[in-house]
Length: 213
Length: 195
Image (cartoon, rainbow over all chains, first blue to last red; front, side, top):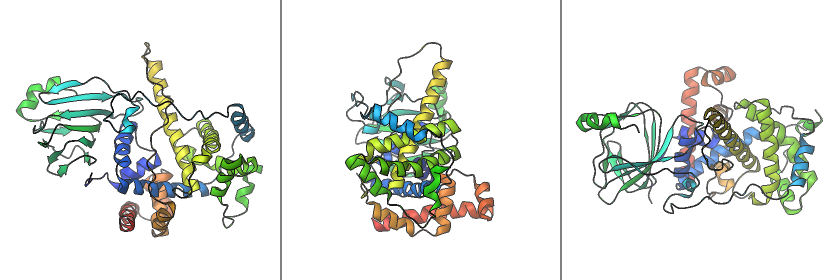
């Protein structure tokens, strides 16, 4: 898999620092898991974070903190940190996605369907899997917020180039998209989106009232 | 204040944290663990408070992180990550989990009817495949100028605003923004060259 579109560096740095909201962290994380180049960048930021931690100004901790930690270690030596793997019903999904509960497929328009991903609700952005039929021309749309898209299967192309598996696309309300899905098969994308998708054009106006992506 | 003896040795006395973690892993060395605890627990708490946690939350993360250091010590591989970076990622993931649990609890309180939500106790998945060796990453970072690594640390790790960084470093706001951008591009380039 040749990845040619990567997340911007500041998004990777925020990911490494743990600052991204859940939906964004999920999408960037799945990209990073499959992209050596970005994994390296994230590791470099983590290394800088380690240096920051090592030199950080200490603050007083609870006087009995060490004893409490040792007694917790002694009283439950078992490793609680290994949860059983989630029911992996979607074998074709990346491992990072398998532990999320993914909702039923909903048809949005001809050739276009989505499955919502259940998040904790700590952030504003929603995450979903978007599936579009091969060769389809997706609705012309703009965003009211930001949109992070990661191609899992198939491809699409728009003004910014061609996006295949592993490629990451970053859209905000400045950008008007009119993606065309590749002919090789359906295109499945992992999407994190804040705000609403605004459908433009005739078809969009027609179905717009019924679509709340 | 007894806890800060480690720090009073001054910055020159570099401790081999990886060796201490190795001793915890190989024979549950409590003295080694205590040294790790005394250095890192108060700093994890400080950094977490800096990043927006309350004092209680930061304390909880610091204690849980150190328990994880004990339990996962055998998983630490000094060839793939620096010791402090490894401890940072543990604390970071705990913070992500804490924020999510808090959001979920708030939402459940708001909803009268409780859905059978999936177990929230799953660790945040910020873990990535460690394919790079730590020494090369370290060498790449060293190629950044002190000024460049400083702005990256202040902005992304300490989560300070650009105006704050400007006043801390005594440089114009525009310089902060351009320096961060340059540092990020430079880091990308160095890492790409190394590849």
